[in-house]
Image 1 (spheres, rainbow, N blue to C red):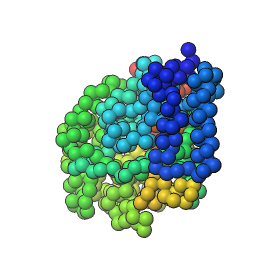
Image 2 (image 1 turned 90 degrees about the vertical axis):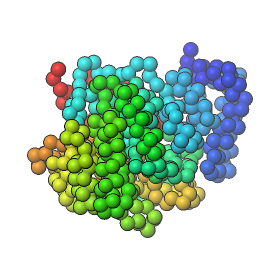
Image 3 (image 1 turned 120 degrees about the horizontal axis):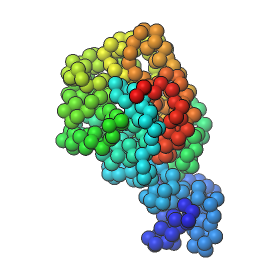
Image 4 (image 1 turned 180 degrees about the horizontal axis):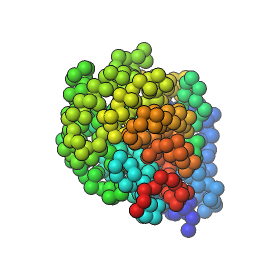
Length: 443
């Protein structure tokens, strides 16, 4: 039985087929309404598909359209249950609802590169691909999902010393158009799962549960990964001056108490510096002195056995060269890049994320920036005789883009947009490169 037939039968069994076009249209208009001509075309596509499905006339060529229609109709779980590639995060659902469980498919067995291992942050991992600190690692079920699907270097989503709510929806959209000075992204945009050209924009803020909620979840998440997989925990502080340092240290100690063997400092999200004209605070890593104070304070607060990683955003040559040598002796790794802050609007010129002019661009659109920073980080490490690991990310959507960052010298490579849009990304990388990827450790 084909994947399309399985999905059709499941929709029929659940009584969802007749209402599929209406549910799809409700989804694509959830946050804004497409122009009349585009909306008419979307309606016609969905109604034609539903008619073909009902008559038993749909074929394999209809699967890409069915995936889009079912996803925006709120039936991503049906697709996943039938083994169809589908985004793992429900763009229409709330942040809190999404934390409960991913809707993307999970492989029956974890992909493995035989008995080969790669050294990352002092641990041997089964394959050096993972998912960075983001909503895709927001809880135990997400960590289980990605670990089973072959992602072996995972970073638990940034946690804080008190609860912080997310930004209002929408929070995440596809960005299929080539970016310019402004990124154009509509809430109903779509990129087919598995397309290596996928880019997205997001505006979540930095939400976090309270410590009494996230600490036990971190403990469960750490227990959910295999011995040859690694789970870092990302932390962020708030405040100014010494208060900022103290808060970072407090959250890092809480993560350590929860069992984290490696703590990642989120120095790359908007947090503590003076606001820009857009109302968005620039990342802490732009201020080398403030960054160094935080890293020194956290290093003093943690046990020597606990690894420490500094995550930075894209920095130009002078800023990176001024920062990294000062951090090198204090950290076990440097991670980057985060999303690239961009002005984002809908095709009608209105903000994609109402009230927030700037959002984070990721995926294929930032591939060049990620490769640039990775090369410069590796060069600074080698030229200075340092030993920190490099965790690279940005634009990793297929085996080739993974390999490019690894070949540039990254010790591990992580993916957010790629992992969201294609939950089978790690499997594809393991299948393509598991037997040949260099720098495996002797066993």
